[in-house]
Image 1 (cartoon, one colour):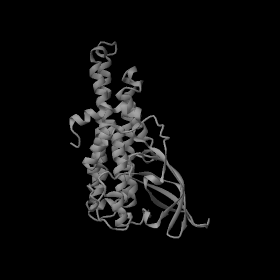
Image 2: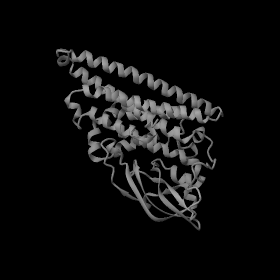
Image 3: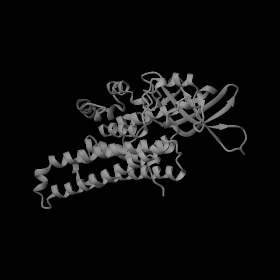
Length: 356
């Protein structure tokens, strides 16, 4: 177990206070630093704790089962380690070696960059940078302005230090309230070449297989694991509500207790099957990958489909049970309501939405 029973109880006891403050207490961040959970994809050469993808996903699930914002921040923060091989060893050490190192940023190319001698002039605003106020570094994507409109737009990634960005505190979502997923802004910032990279061209400095696993299914699997952890917590909380109301619900005209219990049991079994399928598909793709067999486009799509399916099942399990939890469940200061909102927020991410 990553966290003790006492630590889990402490985190959950602060869940509503975290929503009010909009961030994790420093104590909880210290627990993450101590366990190296922001460095699950950082190589040992950079004081990291490089972890096979299937194991990392189970850690994301566990942390999200404890609390949604807590699990999301660990997932997003550790995901930044994926970029370590794409920069020079000296830059990678400056970015990742600190015990408190954590990356925040955005993959959407909502900035522009103009090439100049020695680097680029960058301007832009990037939304949804989770962990923005405790991040030690930011990454953001830009469209490079070459001056030739006939060329295919080039997307490049840029590294900013905290003192180079302005944080706009605009995260107003109804869930994951403690993730500080704010926007960042830079205006005509000079970024030297060494602080930029192309995610399609790894420098090859670190040889762990996680760095050559396709990035899109890597991200989709990470988010699916968060949704699974939240759905498990939701069903656990539903069972507690069921037992607290047993006497009253058993005496209702429709024997509400038995009816709700049957619904929870059905969703519990559905989620369990989906979780098994999810990890089976991930393990199969990971085993193939570490054995040097490249994933075909169809195999990558299979991972992608499973991630979306598991996210959909995680959400539908909560949606199916929520109406039966009583009027108190609609109150924002209840645990089940918070989990419900967090789960919906995660599953609104475009990487978990199936558009087919």
